Length: 116
Picture 1: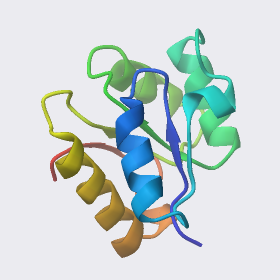
Picture 2: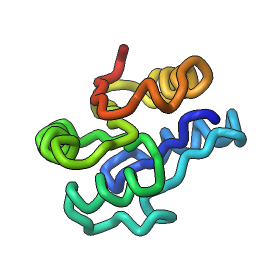
Picture 3: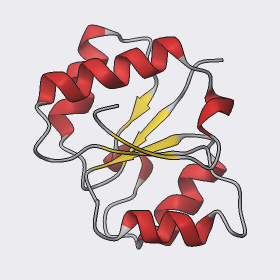
Picture 4: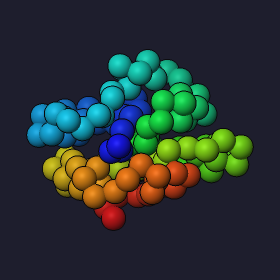
């Protein structure tokens, strides 16, 4: 089973759109589809973990701290942080590569910053 991604409300929607247009088979749910807008980081992490999705965000400020606290008590499918300075194409290409080349269990309780 391939990685399933979850965008948080902070992630540039163009990244998600670019990926899904190029590879419609990639399961990359938007924050809107998941109802994440306005939720606290801990709630976003809990919903994403419940759904078995790797969370993708631009939030380098608060999300790493909340993720670290979250995995002390609950397992997480993982967190990928995409710096806002990273170009849309590079972000999309890297996420597509991760989807194609890795398995979901490789991401459990891991936080990764792009570019890798």
